[in-house]
Length: 505
Image (cartoon, rainbow, N blue to C red; front, side, top):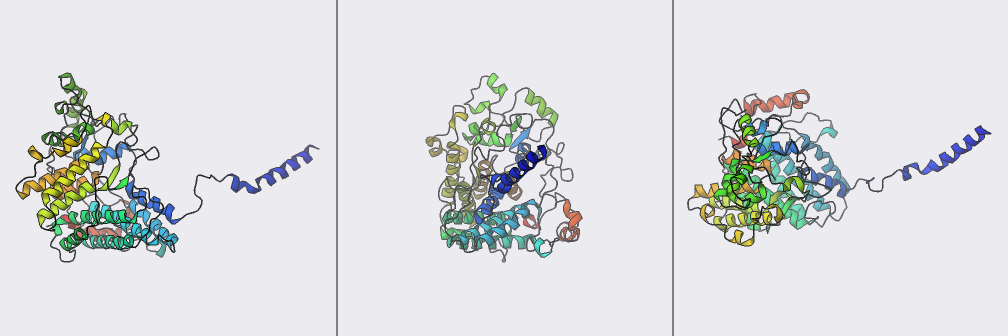
């Protein structure tokens, strides 16, 4: 009898499990791939911070001297030690191909094509800016059996990037509103086209040392974009991502030994003080020792930056005395302390100011572009929770009256360029460390304090390194093509002080 009951129970269980897959399907997890779903992931590969953790975020911002690090051990990037980069960003390329396959026949097909070209351009831009020659024309050919792509000349990579952006522009011009866009553009093809043009201006300015190259046509391309008048229009326009409870700021809820002792650099603090720039109160916490000395938290005198080249032991000893300003607590206590703005109206206007000085364009005045950019940067900071501004928040009159003293647009072009470069540096504080590093490498400005005694760039102790090394995995899997690229660029030696084509005279 017991066996009969067991058998019947087994039959009932099997019958009940005939819809097992249906019962165990999570209704909140997509089970079918679509163009829009792939599009979201593709955009996030650039718009969302992809670093491993908060410490990596701090490390990236230490290289361009935004911060110092008095935590559990010396941070290599603070003292100019960098190693290998990665080609991991290329793993998004197959998804781009799949998105285009799923988008065929979709009313928004052209917009998805635009996203594909834009994201390819951004991906390859970041990789070549870090390393030099990279796989481009043969990248993503694994499905065709090519697992060892050749390295393209950096010049050819840039020509490819510019071509991709022009194709993206054309696609968005014919595109419709599309699904799967996690940015503030929400699938608006016109906004994407404006971002496309803003990015192309940024790429072209990155190539300023090659402005007379007949193949690149830098000045002609730049002027054509400006003449089209399809650019980001106002301070709130940006390509990037809002942080939220789903996608928290990388430093949120990390007030521990890894980030709790992150200090503002002297470079940031002193420049903000010189400009009487109230962004200081949103970036920093007052120094404990200065508060004890009688300074109020709303007084710029309460803020002290660390000399980032200072000996690590001495820096820690000074920190223990409360001598430095830490990063503002909003970064660690708010999930959405500020958006991740990768392309902004503010930076676009500053790029236009530099182009006007260089004679690349004849529209507008350099001063007007400069002031537009600074006002936009200040407006964006003004939108941050004022309770974190230490009783001295930015108000509209601060923006209206900003251009006095050292902020007044200079009379000579060298000083004007330095003002523009400084403002690009300030607006990317703890937002876009890669751009800050690339821009310093291009202009050697603002002045970074480098001490040969503490510099971990031992082969060039008076300098920052100018490139990352190639991925170590390439030695094992693509050594022939890697060796060829090293021989033609760097004398056969993969080294952080070797100048890529972009930087060579």
